[in-house]
Image (cartoon, rainbow, N blue to C red; front, top):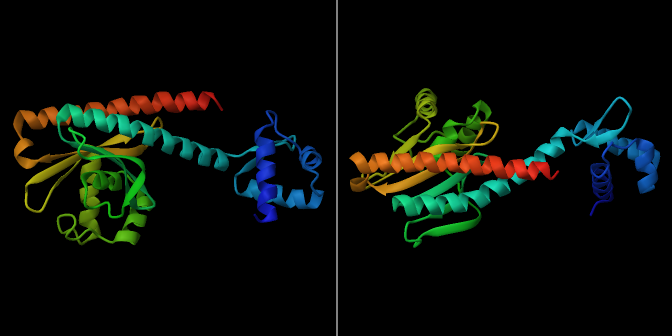
Length: 255
């Protein structure tokens, strides 16, 4: 390992364990590090947001590092909760259920289950690059901010044949806006034999963390049956939000 990275790691671990923060002198004594070298590293870590310094010149863990830790914790909680929710939903509606997320413009599958468990997936997220070819992917793109949508377009271009022949940005923006307003995305396969629908899963801060979807043969997705599936899908999404809020709150108390 590069020595400067080892020093950064040692500094961050030391400061993270200090309730009241630490001064440059205290860190230097604890790590037996040269003052000039330590000062340069501390300035860099502060500029990156990994450390913060108060008026008493005491260093503490900064917002950027806390955000990275929170993102990891959120991802772990989301993955663990996804398996439970997807399995229960699939059994309730007797159809295939999935939960997906977006990472850097690509869609990742978190969990998938069918009523008889003939199709079941749990584990590390699996990349399904284009988000356009699934209801969960479409919903997630619609819930991105402007920069997020720009990244998707940079990586995948406009949907074209993957999504209703969309080939211009104005129409793409209009379709995304409609999905956001409905808080629901739908997709029918090319031969019309199957349909899928997805709804958002919100985190405690009301940002969309994932999309929960159900895939159904078209002949079973009508009338009362359709209403029952949609009600179950919405209820499952709300249950997962409650689980996330509880688990993330519990993990936050332990910090």
